Image (tube, rainbow, N blue to C red; front, side, top):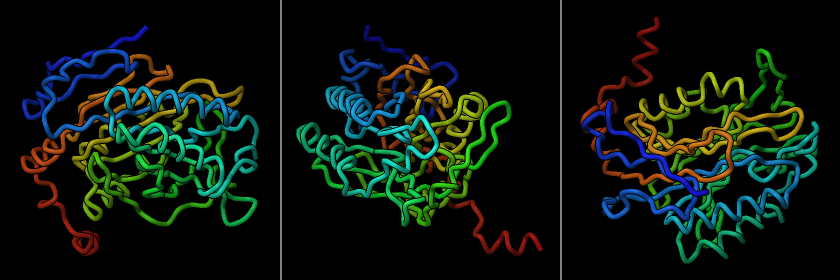
Length: 323
């Protein structure tokens, strides 16, 4: 049954008292406050799903969510890391890895062409298994596709998840994934996007680069956080990145049990530049979309009232200060 949750205004800074309510899971719901939406507001959607080792099933889920987001008036829908495939066994991702012009990703580009041209919605496809420089490696690649099905930008995940989770399993992403080398931002209908993937979230210097060197306004964090680390750190880290960069953050998440070895935290979130959660699915583990209206004038207002860009010290200052 469709449902929608509203975000209470109590306790919110007067600066952002007008922040949009937490949005609904289904596009069939009439979205609260739509008639009062500011002229410079732009609607975005963040998808939550439980990808498995079935390319066709995952594509069907993504197709349905794109249609829901388009019907809700979103101009961008963000999908989580590994949206198209999560393997059941080690090595499965390498077996299905393809170049960006291969049939898997081109199917998603076709999805954009067929469903998105009229609505003008773009796709953020976070964490695609792009074929690497040899048969033993792939790139974990965040791909932005426009409403005509063209690839507008790609970012290869820089920070790889080689971690032994306390009380959980060990991950060794670096054993089969090549790290990216470039910081990437891209213009879009909803502002200038800063592209990242999952574990990047723990490295604030990347987000500082996106904000201060690449002029990002909206930071994208597609992820498949583990259950243990997600419960401990997911929302805290996302809100911190939003506050310290004064950007919107859209964090699409994998959720629930993918197979007998892997479980993701979920909790897809959309956060404003003041650190307030403005979009969240009511169920942390459900498949659906969180919807929020982002207002680029809020970014300008926050940055004007808290001018950290003027106050931050250059790299040279810290080099001399540490002597």
